[in-house]
Length: 326
Image (cartoon, rainbow, N blue to C red; front, side, top):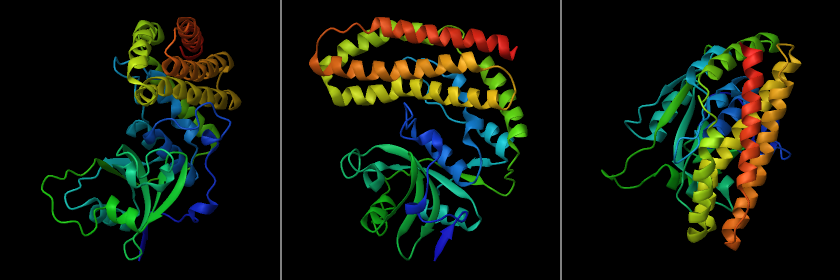
């Protein structure tokens, strides 16, 4: 018997949200944000409204902020109530109980068993990622889930290994972190009302923005990091770029999309700030590729000027937002 949090067509007929379109500079952001984009989209809710949280992104030393939509924002915008799932039996057993109650389960899992990661981690690398479980069929050993840019299905050996079906008891095994999403208070607001709430949340996150230009704070560390990565190779660079440049650039692109939407809803003039954020995003994507080349060929590259350009876009965006939001 299939347990589903809500009705949804088969994955082969699913169309991802425009925030995951191929023409985006960052078609993927991070696993948690990507899951929420598609989960909200599948629930016929507008994910653009919750992207203001990226305004608080900062350089945190060994990473850029791994940004996530705050639970209170999700409740205020959409009426979605998120809580930690205490996996005290097994993720299969506990998730089944929540799905019976019409709740979506978000769980950290091992991407080694996710067929949608074919070509990267599938059957190659054990990497923690987050999925949103929309349905389970225990008899067919089938899972339908949101991950990265879309909605997927896995079954058979992948299901057995992912959920350790029939595995002997192992006291050393520690389950991953999980959450469940209550849908019973879900609200679908008209765009005007939704945008009004999103604007207030944007103001909240603007207050939480870095006190100093974080790109300038990152400048020398980045240049030093690239020199060190020339000695460790491209695989180490990919992990580095995900934790740094992708979080910086993708957050800026999502902010640009939200500001353009608020502009279209007539809630202010965000065109300059949106343009700066989009330029920041595109420049960061170019920097990511040029830095990768520098790591591979192990030759000097003038990357400092590009960091300075990105910093200028950040500063300009904040100055324009300060005039618009205050």
